[in-house]
Image (cartoon, rainbow, N blue to C red; front, side, top):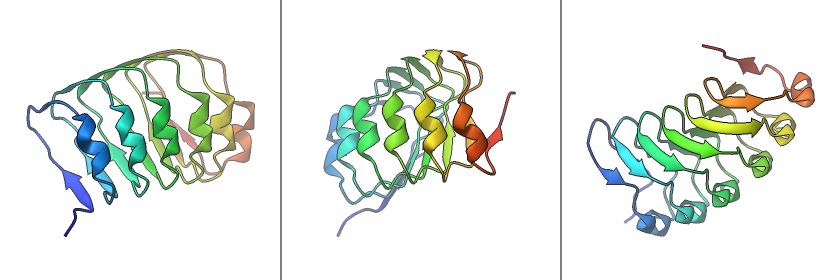
Length: 150
């Protein structure tokens, strides 16, 4: 017996444990609005079946672990409304199945990675309320991409 979906809402959980990488059959993680703190553990990159990672509305900090770019089945990545910082990894362009990226209201800096423009399945991309610069010239090839600036 194994879990395919893990979801909790409205709790005060602390950090995401690194042992989450052992739950290899997970397809969905929904831990939004739980006052999670600390970094997104690199072990999350071991969840090769993960299609949805929803951790917005917490107090997560640190950078996006590059290991997240190993989640090739990922369709939804919602990491907004946290305290994440640093640059958005250009390797997010490896997530060819990504349909929705929501990373608003963090502390990201630097240029928006041009690799995001190569994501042909990307329908929504919200990077607002960060300190990002530039634009992605290739986004005009991605339809129907919706930019939000709220």
